[in-house]
Length: 455
Image (cartoon, rainbow, N blue to C red; front, side, top):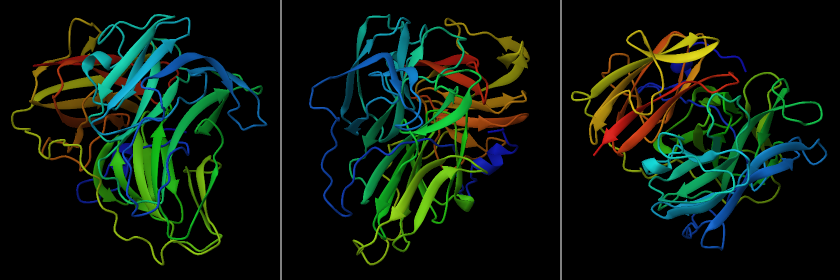
């Protein structure tokens, strides 16, 4: 998928015209419950007090049961890790057994975890050695959809698909829906025999395989939780036939809005939650797909024959419960900083005030006291679209002159070539927090810097 111009204008809605952003990926996993039914407390999908997950070699038929076998490294040796699901405020607890030959860390994409669990080797924690078993436990602070991934400790290694799974944290009072479905979208490069290859063809999987068909009833309400596990690709998605209401982005609820023409984008690692009512006749279908000619279908939904559960759709989509992020950010007293992303030596580097910025685990980009606002300028002087991810701190996209922000929270921003994006966030968790820049379509990881929040 070639980068397109004016991503920020198209993908990021203004305060007056809420459209949608993000790319997409997913799988059809989760639960179904009748509309209006009493929702039982969410619980981890295991009867054991602690779930042990092995990171080990395995194989999968990514193109379907009759397709070739792909050798891979995954959680429990699978192309997609087990679904972890808890209620907000509950503990996420698991043991990770590193059965690979390489040191690694476990990263919780988008989660506001304690700094020591952020998964940046050499900055927040030492890597987990081959043969070691690590216990991870933290309180699920925010409801939403998140990724957990095994990250190789060695830097500057060629990008390969990383072991990935979904973490779903349920809000205290979930909205009434008939189908609650999760989709994990991944982007593989596969050779003719199914082997992973840097020169292989791009293959999109949905929940570790081809897209599936889901039968629903007329007027059913669906909640679609979508995650883009691609490492270096943004996804341009479209829901055809029916208008989707986006209710959450990157794990944080937003005022429901309908993206223009049903199109929205997901950055690498980005997540979106959609609610849609199946206001179609029996036998009709609608699809979620990557937008463009000959692009893969992510999911197909068919209205089954028979009487519907209700005579008409449920009506207005209500906002999800907030996670308690501040409604206002004090920009007047904000600490300001700016970094530039530029091409260098066949790759990319960061710079500050015209001087190259090398990663130094002892020297932060800036230090800020907990409770203050950060206003950060991200200047992309390269020819590539850059996906910039801020660890541990959801942010707002700012208007060009810091005089307002867009009406949602993100953890990753897509920045077009020769464009400056400004963001703001509240420094609320002490520790050392990374800022990653990933060039879209690049086959190696991009540069990283970090900032420190003090008590």
